Image (cartoon, rainbow, N blue to C red):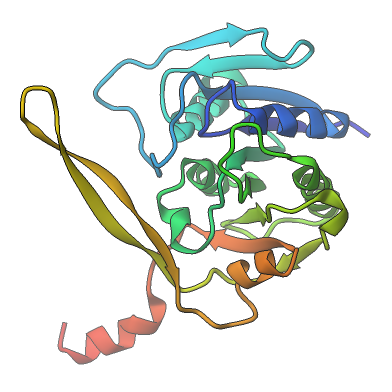
Length: 254
């Protein structure tokens, strides 16, 4: 049986420990090709580069894996990979492993998940992986287990059309990891604040900060699963239409 072509990208950049872990974990499953940003691109969401040139350069950072860096966003990496480098759609697209969780509404800002969503838009089975630990030297041992368990499932079953998976792994020891749990995204959000500061010339500037607030008490959410030692698996779709609201809007006389 021919091994699948697996395309890997991320938003933390080519030098992150997360993408190295993902590459090493996935190599036994097929032929791996990597295109990742040459610098951190966290929080870029589904941004694409339209007002500047894009450059792609071959890299030897992973000895036996075909690897390239890109000056653009994670979604730029996906588009370049499909239409310029590989000249075909890969059999599987993986994004991550992100340093920091992409749970609840964070998925809307995430470059990691936007790369996976772009893959789903192209009809490619796609998964975004994140670890709930922002440390650059985080322990990815449990994440490796989550990746292997997810791939074992997805390579044996067809992905639902227009859907990708958002997999978040808790910050726990590998021995405490309980496995995967399919769930919904919690109704939680960032309470944004801005620190107002001044530069050396007295000009004001702002630094985004805030706290993550979870008022969702459901036991079927991604945040609850993480708290119980499971990796959360949330199916994500790119169709943002609020179908339940269409009848109400039509009743307004549109």
